Length: 220
Ligand code: IPE
Ligand code: MG
Image 1 (cartoon, rainbow, N blue to C red):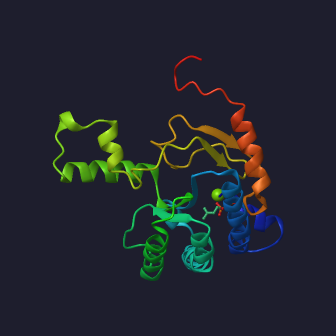
Image 2: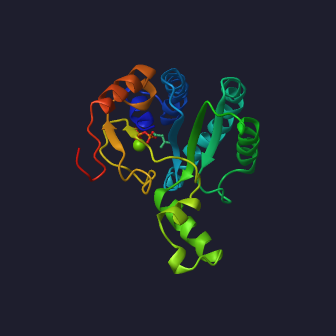
Image 3: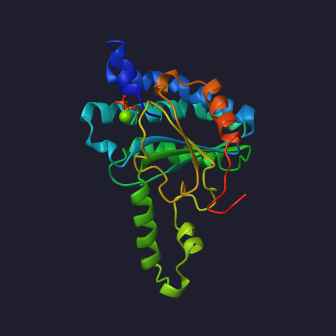
């Protein structure tokens, strides 16, 4: 969900106003995904690198994430959405937010219409490292190490690799998002800043995706 800061700057607003404006975009996109019948929908909300931002912005984002969870979880729960957080639950995540994350996951755990994964304090490299560390700690022997075993140690072992990834704001990079999982994902880059993103943009991306020829390294 990139481009909040530039969206705000364009309007002479504070960067945090841009984040706030991203809320409408997010829940419109979620509605769009539900309309489409998407069963796995993920967003990149906060990276392991985002802690390097000014403390005020980080603090805003922590409070903001807690606020939007509290405000939207009952509605999403009623719509059959399972909400999950993917990322490191380390000491940097404020305790109050962690509590709301855990409550929200528990509240929505039995829903299956759509899994809405919020990548938060998430890094693709961190995920792979955490998986390797946990495997070593569990004493998995070298001959048992393969892609399937490694995946079992990821933050969401049951999550299929993404078919489609949309990056907003005109940047052409992955920025540490789901590094392992998006080996064969179709990528779509749009110049739209996240606060301007709406379900129609998701539909456009899906139409674009449907015209792609996916070969997974093979031939068609
Ligand atoms: C994305 O918008 C939101 C987060 C990373 C939390 P940015 O804050 O990166 O917006 P730009 O890239 O500065 O425009
Ligand atoms: Mg950015």
